[in-house]
Image (cartoon, rainbow, N blue to C red; front, side, top):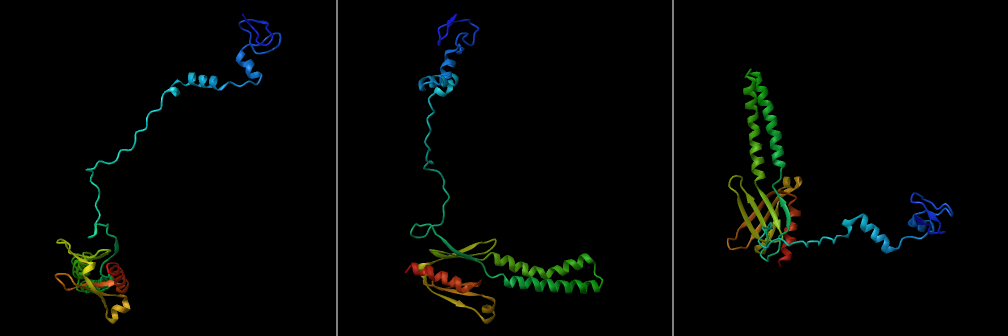
Length: 229
């Protein structure tokens, strides 16, 4: 038997409350009923007993490892000073002539198909013959897409060719003058040629043919030239 912690009366083993004062037979419940909170060490001990894994030491955090010195990193084009080049513009010849060529070829194809149908030519053969004029603007379109003019903060790059690719580099420090040439129809349609005078060892003149808005592209070239002078 136990005694009541409140009044000292004897308690039976199965008693939950004291028959004399009515206090709980469990000393822990008695302390809580009096408003006494568990002390911090007791609370930590109780938590540690209920969660034994919490007492384990935390795992050390591995520091981030730098990449190996021999790792392959993507390379970007660099100019003569070792700085990364910045692309100012990349342009191709105007697409206006290609569009006009497609329109004219489509008109000719319709006329050919109508003429062949008048003479009662088989439909399949008539369609094949009528599509032949479209091959001309299609070839011009593919050829136009193989020409690219690129200006960076260090050079002008000209790429030409489809199967055999040719790339020409003109350093900005070798450029003496930039000229715009445009006929009256070209000025109305807002395209023209930008002529670049090269003062390198080979010398000569480079022409950016039939590019849209040639004045704006020439101003961009001149702006980059002022940085080199």
